[in-house]
Structure formats: structure tokens, C-alpha cells
Image (tube, rainbow, N blue to C red; front, side):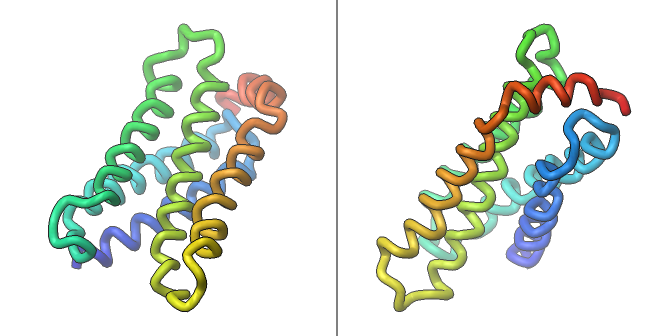
Length: 155
């Protein structure tokens, strides 16, 4: 049962995370951001009920903690850190890496789907490629996106 709940919220977060395709700062952005954030929190919480890989606390649980911290830092800026002149930029970067981590976690589940593929290929496709692609997307025109988001706040 916990696996179904975990998977459901993971998929919901993956879909809501596509918010990066929408204009930043709008009311729609904020609503979808709430869906993403709540889904991620529930995804992280339920991950601690999954012990089928090691039978106890394992590396994926450590990564869940990292995921939670990334999300908390991302949410800190719009909720409490607006005095920081670059809070929108910081929020965007940290939220971007929260999503990149989620995509990489989803990729981890694909390791078992393709067991005959060499490890280097699975690591490259499911971890390295999303990380570097995500990093490029996060930092490409970051200042311009932050300026546009500031203009859209409340719209």
C-alpha cells in the first residue's frame, strides 16, 4: 500500500513539476507549485516506509533527506526570504534541483526495467543526463527568468 501511495505522489510531483514550462510568478504557478510541494513532501515521507531494497535504512533514504532539504530551501525563499534581493533566483535554482532530483529518482526505478543494459549506460541515461540537462535548463537565462517572474507576481 505504501508503495502505491509513494508512486502516486511521485507521479503527481513529476507532472506538477512541469510548471517550469509556464510563466513564473503567476497565480497558476503558485497553485501548481503547492501541488508539487505537497506531493514531494508526501513522496519523501512515504519513502521512509519503503525498505524492500535493503531491509533497513539505505542510500535512497539518505537521498530522500537530501530531497527534503532541497525542497525546504526552495520554499524558504518565497515564504520567509523575500528580504533577500535574489530570492526569486534562489527559489528557482533550488526548486529546479528539487525537480532534477525527482527525475533522477524516477530514473533509479528504471534500473530494474533494463537489467541487461550495462551499468555505465543506465547511470549515464538515468542519472548523469538528467543532472546535466537540468543544470543547463536551470542556469540558462536564469536572470532573465527571475526578472520576468518578479513582474508576474500576483498575476
